[in-house]
Every structure is written in C-alpha cells, then in structure tokens.
Image (cartoon, rainbow, N blue to C red):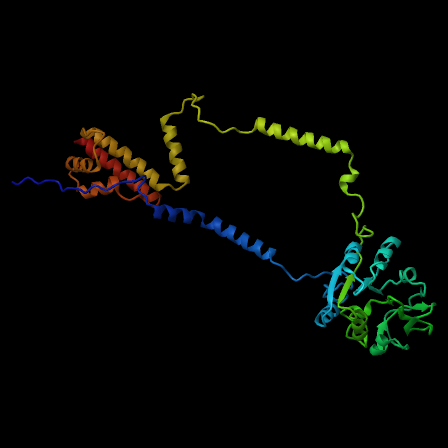
Length: 398
C-alpha cells in the first residue's frame, strides 16, 4: 500500500477577528444609519427654518402687513414708482432715516410725547400725519382737531388742493378745522368748515389725514383713495414709514434711558465676579483629572466564569460576532496545539496539518473551521462553537 500524505495547506493571514475594513464599515453603517438619518432630517428641518422668509406682520397700517388692515399694497405701488420706502418702529430710527428731501409718515402717534414730536419735527422732512391727528395741534398752530362722525364714508374733495382734486372722492371719516392762514381743508363732512384732509403750507408742508382707511389694503382700491395716498406719500424719493411702537422709550435717538446695568448697585457686580471665581475654583478642585493608569487590587474576587459570561453578554449586545468567533477559535486552537504537543510558535499550517492527521478530517475543512470567515448571526456563532467542541473532542481522543 502506498502511504498517503496530507495535502499542504497554504498559510492565510488572520487579522483580528477575521473581518476586513469593508465588512467593518458595512456593519457600522447598518448600525448607525437610522440615527444618521434622524440627524440628517433634523438638520434639514433646521436649515429650512433658517432660510429667509418674506417678512410680514399683523401691525395695522404697516407696509409689510398683507392683511385687510395693512398697507402693503400702497407700499409696493410706491416702490414700483421708484420711492424708497423705509419702515421703522422707533423714534430714533425715524429721526436717523428722515432728511429734508424726504417724506416722514407718522401713523397714529397718540403715545408720542412732546420731546419725541420735537425730534420728528426737527428732521426737516415733509410731515404726513395719518390716523390720530391730535399731534397736528402741537406741530402746527393752524390746525384744530374735531370729533369723529361715524365710520368711513365717501366724501368729495371740495377744495383746490391738487392732490385732493386728483382723487376726486375718498373713503374717510373724522374732521379737522383750519384756523390759520395758508391751511386748506378737504373732504368735508357734516360741517362744511372742517374736513378729513388738511394741508398747511410754508417752508415745510404738513399734511394731515384723520383716517387710516384710505391707506389700508381693504379700501385702497375704493373711490380715489389710491390717487390721494400715492400723491400724498410719493412726492419725494424717500419715504420713512413710521408706525410708533409701545415699547419705544427713546426720545431723540440717544441711549434710550438707563440700561439694566445702570439700575444694579455696584456691589452686585463685585459679588457676581466673586461667585464666578468660586465656581471656577470648585470646578478645578472637583473636576476629573486625566493622568497615567494606576493599578490597584480589586475590592472583590471575580470568578473567571463570571468574567467570561460578562464578556459574552457584551459581545452579544454589540453583535460582535467576529470578536466572539475569534475568541472561540483562538481557545480551541491553543488547546488542540497543547494536546498535540506543538510549540506555541507553531503556525497555522502546522496546526491544521497536525489536527487533520489526528482526526482524519480534510485539511481544508479544518482550516475553514479554525481560520474561516466570521459568522453573521447568533445561529452561525452557535454552530461554530458546537463544531469547535466536536473538533476538540476528536483531538483529545487521539
């Protein structure tokens, strides 16, 4: 009989747990793709929220209010005609934007005090007062405010003012009375000597309209409202549209009154700095310090079986099938080599050849069992552990 020799097995390098960079990257992608998708969705929502949107408001007679009580339509038409419309809510901004060659529109203004009115009057701009015209008495001695006479009604111009004549009729309410020279009153109501629209001439004209209805989107297209508004506000290239805000406490555009820091006693600042210093010192004192590792005896003795079961649970929780398989294979290979009398320096080829001769198994099958690819699930790992146990039992019987 001819003696048969075991086939020579080519040595294959085994790195780590038998996985490659590609398989590890694929496993990590499968693990983190759901959180990454959620983070990407949140980032997309944040980006869409941060995108600039058309500015709109609900402030009455504001040029950015598209509602019925807003005046966005009039502002857009003025901009199309080349007028630079600048919307402001504070007296300081209105004073800064207005100039002698511009128009300053004041809507309402019932909360403005004398100092604020003096600041607006000192800009040198053409003043247009719409709505509450009680401030007209303070800015011009030739105008007196009358009462209201119901809601907006259609009135004829009834005067020789070019802007009122161009409008013909307007939907207005309220009344103004002119007592000084050079004042013209139009759109009279029940009292023929008073009207809803008045113009006081001079070096700087002052125009007053008792009602905001002609400026609103709801009534702009009625009667001659559009003609009156566009001619009244479009005489200069710049229009400062001022709608006073209730929280505007500034007067002439200066510092706007005392700040919060000015109201705090000086000792509070010193105490605050001391508290910050104490917090920093406490953080440095109690904070975690990073340094070299220090070995110390364990407070309790941990059995080897508990350590093995704990490591197995960690492998199972993280689905590290490759690491668990590598540990099982390394243990089985070490015990088989010791049983067969191989040195610790023996390579994979010598071990496979010795195990194949001792068990009678095919060398390729032994190599696949000890150095094959890692399993992909729990069932594959359990099958590998059972096969390695059978292989060890066959080696020990020899």
